Image (cartoon, rainbow over all chains, first blue to last red; front, side, top):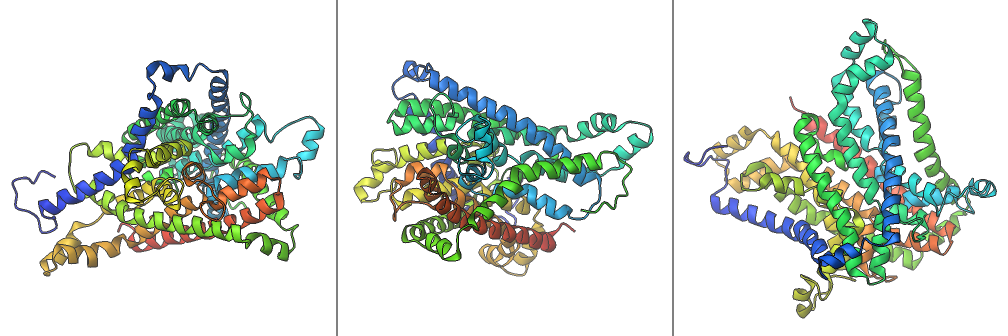
Length: 287
Length: 276
């Protein structure tokens, strides 16, 4: 809005008010967002850069990093396939109960992370419904890697689906129908027609899904059992180091996750520019 | 779900079948199990667990702090959205991207960072300590963590409404003699009300279930600074599964009610303010 020389519009605030509002808003964001970010790196480097890198030279830290990648590496692709399938069914066909289905897909977002983990303990734990069967067959789910993967899948369940459903609904069916009538098979239609259209929406969903998968704490904490080197993800390892008063170590490992968060925000902003569909729907990340 | 298909496209049974199966296995069956487990308790047992003094104290803290945090964010979220939409300033795009930090930053990291800042020897804590204000390890710490967690919700619900806002409405108010404040209070704010309410409910719902960022800063003293999700974890660690399940059912019912409220609010705001 280049209106520097023009007289002030009736719907504009006086400059003093404007700058006061900007100042207060920036102070609030500075206090709540910038200061914590700065604190992570300051604490991580509190004993120098050598000590910082020393924190990663630890078998348990490396095991935690590995487990986080395994959990996200399973949860993200599975939720991606689900998201595409759900969006295809919902956007390309008419059936009764569609609204209910969409609400149910969103359900995991409104469940507390702690409860998300707990439901699997009730199901697969030693006193659980199907737990004794698995234990009898020597399959450990709770306090082991499968439980962590399950909890991660649950908390990241809706991310890809809720990005693709409105996008594919808005795009309609005519392009796919044309391809199909011209003789393309289902797969050809999907890969050559649908996929290019939903590419950026899918990438957007994956970025958000991955960030949550790698950073999840509450749900994973309930099912993990906190066995060092075996069932600790990066966030759980941060907690252990912190509770042992190894603050530099805790913040050093936390700085990895902070770096992940910054990369997520940068990628997200970049994709929002590419994929105008989600530019106006930033709320997607959360609801 | 009866199939009354009129689409020529293939894959309906496959994709819908897979969607329902995966949803059932991962989400619906485990959630249903929780209610089924809780139903093993008699009503008296259930009531006794969920109204124990320690549990009631945790509701007071969880609901109270979540409500206050959502109120703080209601005010500052509107301010941030307003500033981002209406004004130009250097670094605005950076600030806009930064608003989503609480979604992207793992909650455990937020928790230890906020604790370090507000501890009595921390950057902000050491200024507050001489004034007799303790933030970390008190309910104020819980409030700070929940404010951080809920920060983006109101900004992101109000921002698009403000972007689509027809400035001519404000111009007509001004031409009819309203001053800037009257225009804001009587014209602009009522139009933003559904978005504000939606954002407030979202922030409140998120704060209610929040665990990771709160446990580090809260101090976790029973009856004083213990949030409800932590109480569930404590019961699980004591292998008191009926106790954990009963409290979880209370939390689940609260989140379902909030989910319904959010759906209603979104339907309401679409109905009122759909672009014409």
